[in-house]
Image 1 (spheres, rainbow, N blue to C red):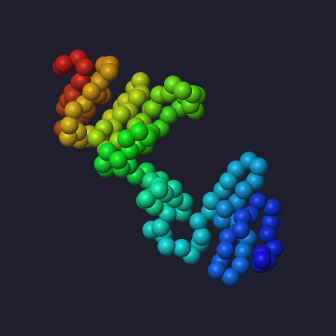
Image 2 (image 1 turned 60 degrees about the vertical axis):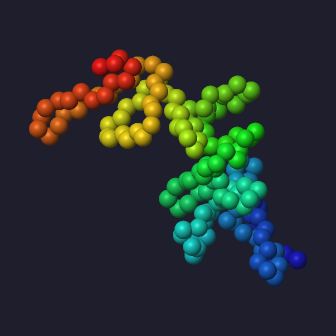
Length: 152
């Protein structure tokens, strides 16, 4: 039994007594929209994707998005980690622009500008020429920072 009236695009959920229409998940021919409930626990995700172990692997919060990557080698034979690729790269052959795994971070870009401190605990591999923009200190001296690839 459905309670109340619904509008085009609204979905149904069960409140423990009956089915109620809601616009929190709104569906129309062009989009699916998920809206946060106004009086909600702010630390809980607005939208979450869970794996077969009921662990959150992707979540949307009030202030951002989190992708959780398995810390063990339990993803053998499947796509583990988190990757960002191009829309035109979705065929059999594709290129990940950003890939995060438990032991590596891969960024594919023609230009990478770093204007703040970067901390690296392990190896850095560069497939081309790398360098930085010269930094001018508060004492007005200009310092060259690390150049990788030219061995300077």
